[in-house]
Image (cartoon, rainbow, N blue to C red; front, side):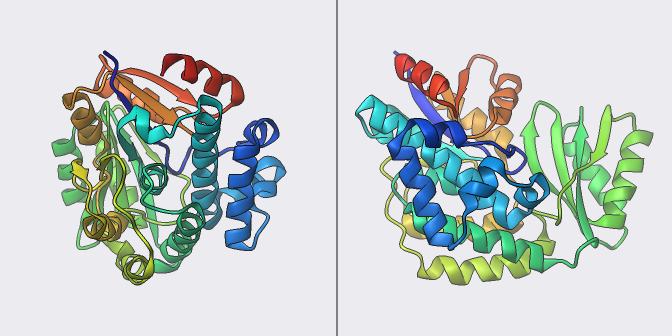
Length: 314
């Protein structure tokens, strides 16, 4: 018997034009884009469909935009399939900002509230560190212990930490820009396959994000969070969470904490899930899952044709 998990992408999966086909094909998706636009007082959907790529890549826009596409996909699946997603899901998870999409899909968070929280999260992360002072780099072909040793040696009194353990030998480090540069040099010296600076505007998921975590703590304290209808795998623990107060706390920790995606996918597989479906823009998480848990069947849906194919599989 098939057991299904639904996962939601994070930053890096955005592209101009995303969500347009959903908007044109499904009234349920149009309603999501409208709700997000209204919540933010901004025509974000226009920026997503036909806007400027640099403007879309600003984290305060990227975060609610990816959330909107994921939830537009969820609502289209539900309206076309005639069932709530939670009837088909054993659990849900999301990568970084995707955790908010997972929580909205599980009924913990309303769409308008999720969009507003992610807009604030993007702005708070941008404010936390002056432009140019922090950065991130991806190390490819490296294990966690090796990446930690590079961080320790490259820090030299500054901050450099593992931001994402994405699995398949892909680890992202984050911290002060000089430390990131030193890590790239060290990685090459130590024979790491590839080390590349990421085109991001801030050192996400590092302790330099502490001011942003404080802002999110205040905002999340006022947010309405319901118990999820299915368990959510949290980024910072790679374990199931069901309690709204624990979810609140973990979302604050997630701002500075490591996204433990490799362990999250391993946990999903260990829980007996047979099929993992990525909902929203791109298929980054499918690619990672194939390297982490090759026995897990994966697919992605973010267009009308992909939604049709997924409905046949559910």
